[in-house]
Structure formats: C-alpha cells, structure tokens
Amino acid sequence: MSGLLSARAWNKIWVYRGTFILGLGNTLKTAAIALLLALFLGIVFGLMATSNKKILKTISRVYVEVIQNTPILLQMCFLYYALAFSGHSPGIIITGILALGIYTGAYMAEVIRAGIEAVPRGQFEAAGAQGFSYISMMFYIIIPQSIKVILPPMTNTIVNMIKNTSCLYIVGGADLLSLTYSFVTGENTGGSYAPAYIVCGVIFFIICFPLSTIASTWENTLKKRERRSVLNKV
Amino acid sequence: MAMIKLENVNKYFGDLHVLKNVNLEVKEGEKLVIIGPSGSGKSTTVRCMNYLETPSSGHVYINGHLLTAANKTRVIRENASMVFQQFNLYPHMTVLKNLTLAPTKLHHKSKKEAEELAYHYLEVVGLKDKAHVYPSTLSGGQQQRIAIARALCCESRIILFDEPTSALDPETIQEVLDVMIKLAKENITMVVVTHEMGFARQVADRIVFMADGEIIEEGTPDHFFNNPESDRVRQFLGKIIR
Image (cartoon, rainbow over all chains, first blue to last red; front, top):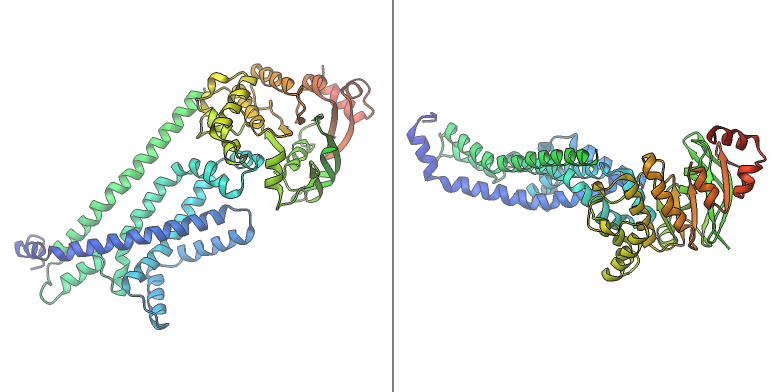
C-alpha cells in the first residue's frame, strides 16, 4: 500500500489533495507574515550592527549569535511552551510566525549588515562631510548601493524560511509537512508514505526553485556588471 | 574672526599619537595649505576640522561653534564641505543628482533651484556636458572636478581639500589644480592638504608645515620657500624641489 508504484496510494493523494493545498496555504501564509517580521527585525538589527554606538552593536550581536547558534526547533519549542505555560497561548499559527520571524530576522540582520559594510567607507565620509544625518545617509546613499549586494542572499534566506516552516511540525503545526505527516499516519487516510512525501517535496521545490534561481541570476548579472564597469575604466 | 579654530587638539589611533597638541586658526576667506611628509598628521588635522575624526582631546570651533558629537551634523552641514583624495562621488547617481542631493535634501532648495546651481558650478569646473552621465564613466580628473562642483553646490563658507590630486594621473592633476586656483579667487575659506608645491606657492595665504603630528613651522609662501627657519622644512624642501 505504501509502495511507490501503487496506483491506489497515488489515487488516495489525489482524493485528499485538499489536505496538501491547505498545508501549502498555511505554509505560505506563515512564511509571508514571518517574512515581514524578519525584514523588520533584520533592518533594525542590521542598522544597529553598523552604527557606531557600541551598545547598539552589542545588542544586535547578542541577538544574532543567540539565534544563529541554537536550533530553530528548540526556539520553537521554547516559544510555544513558554507562551503556553505563561497563560497566553497565542495559538500555533502565531507561534510559528513569531518563531520563524525571529529566527530569520537574525539571518536578515547579517545579510543587511554585510550589504552595508560592502559600501566603501568613502561613501559614509562623503555623506558625513555634507552633513547628512545617519538615517538620511542610509536612505539616500548607503542602502541604494547595498541593495544589489543584499538581494541575492536575502532571497536565499527567504527560501530557507519557507523550508523552515516544516519545523512547525515539532509543535503540531498545520504547515505543509505537518499535514503531510498527519495524512500518511491518519486512520482513514494513512499508508501512502512514499507518494505523499514525494508530493510534499515537489510542492516545496516548485516554490523554492524559482526563488533560488532568481537569486543566482541576480548574483551573476551583478558580477557581470561589475566586470563591465571595471573594463569601462581601463 | 577665525572661521576654523583648533585648540590643543590631540588624536590617538590606539597607541599611536598622530596629532600632538595642534593649535591652528584659519581666518574667513583664508587659503591655508598644509604640507608635510606622509604620516605627519596633515590629513588627520583636516579631518578633525569636520569631525570625520573626533579629536581624542581638545576643541574644534567652526564659525564660532564648538563642535560636539551632538551638533556636528548640523554645524558641518551649514558651514563646511570636503573634497577627498578618492573623490567619493555617489556612484548610483548621475552627476546632476550628485550635485543636487544635498541642496534639495539638506538645504531646502527646490529641484529647479538646485539644478540651476548645479549647472552653474558644472560650468565653473568646465563639465556642463557631463550632467547626465554616471561618475564611473568619467576620468579621475573629471570626477574630482565634479566632486569640487558638488562641494560648491552646498555653498559652504569652508571647503576642506584632503590631498585632492594625490590619486590622479599626472596629466590630469593640472585640470583639477586650475579649478582650485579659480576657486581661490572667491571668498571661500580653503584648507588644502597637498603635495603640490607649485599650487601652494601660487595660492596659499599661509602655509603650515607638519611633521610627526606637530606643526613645525608656518608662514607666507615667500617665507616658507625662501627663508624657512627650521632644518626640518629645509630638509623636506630639499627632497621634493629639485
């Protein structure tokens, strides 16, 4: 029944296709809202990391290191049970959004920090010597130059986040992977292990592959453009 | 009145004592040229004037205002511009945008006013036809002339030049110096760190010679080139003027 070539198993997936669509919807919803949170955190902590205030740098560093050096599964369990036991359980969707947002935010912060640091010091000095405040310097001069450095790795971070929605499985989420698991172990629906996981994987691939392709294309155009501008100067 | 005043300025980079109790006044409209061997602290001195480097101790006054971390952005915006060795034009903007950014965003000028100003100064530096190109398409000398025009567009009373010709090909140095000589006729306070002795002789009201983080000698170009008092200056001039 679980066989890869069993027509009945594949048929069952077709019949219960709604489960996969629901899971995909939940995954995308969670990812989309978590992305907004991650972008917000990434911009705030990324800017803090590049400011010249030591205290801001330290806060940003602590956030990034703590999040990047502990497993996301642990963070999810912690957040879920910590919130649940403190009496205000916000539900699995909110927990997922918070956990993924905070986790991905740390990576976003690093991407944004690296992008800002890739802009030559002279640009900061030129802006400072003209009397731009920190915020307007970032807005008009630094961010527009770092955006092309930031976009490719940021897209990769988004791809990782979409895949990481599957970690919600650990706290009983309703994301694509969790629903696939419920499906293959369900009393009425169970059994179609191989086909179900293949379908689940294919869905993830269809979403993530175009994004990572865009990221690597961007990166290549960027490299070509740089080479061209070097050639122009010669 | 002193437009720029450095009072007992010291600067350390780690253990390195790069400025040793520097005292210096620059009068309104004065053309001050700072010369000296590499590592003598001339660039650090000029960078302390707009707080790109914060002095480790001592005071900097710009147009009567004591510079602090809190007021530097405003005081510098209202009083000083800078021209860098590496030009530091904004590469993601056209020349025109480079010139109009600060006037429109910081000096409350309308787009039209700022563009008129930009074209005026592009004409001054002789690059009116380059308004719509990106900096990377220009030669070093052209980029530096644009950088000078950008500084002029802020209509500051002070322009600081930090080795403006040191990164240029020999054949384009003169086109930049010519623009600076033209500027020197205006009532702008200019502080120029340079190795161009011909320029110093021609333009400077006063020359300051620095070595090892200290001001060794100052005086008019005539005094400086013809009757320097210190051996250190004579030694330096002997090496560079052949």
